[in-house]
Image (tube, rainbow, N blue to C red):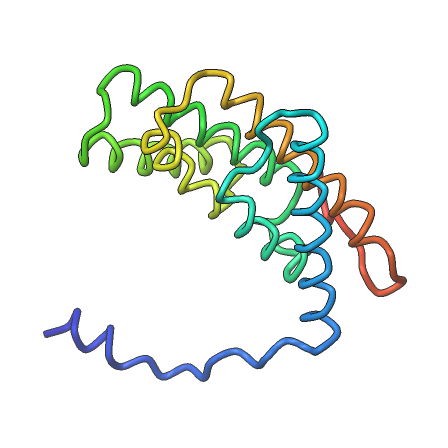
Length: 168
């Protein structure tokens, strides 16, 4: 059976471990970005934390040159996926099939608009499971993702061997 053979027959070696320096940068970047987002939310009494931001931090701080980690992908991907979840929830309600439709549609739209950001693929599920309203696009999605990108711009350009973004 070809499918089973392909699944079990991986021949490539796994990628090497990232350097200790990269691990420490990713840890500190994720810590600082999450502190900035959650701390700003506490100070302003605005909901700025979105669960998928944790995965965004991994990409932005551990793999800052990845196309998925670029600012337009972080902000655009999160906004498109959240709007998609809200539209589908508004039209279809919350069902297993509408959640599936939301995720699939968000993926397609991120690809069409050239802003794929894998963590944002979970936003339609977050929106539907949390029964979010339209303000969810502004806060936490837009404002939180902008704070994340601002922290990444500062932090990822801190050393001579780091540069972020690679494109806008």
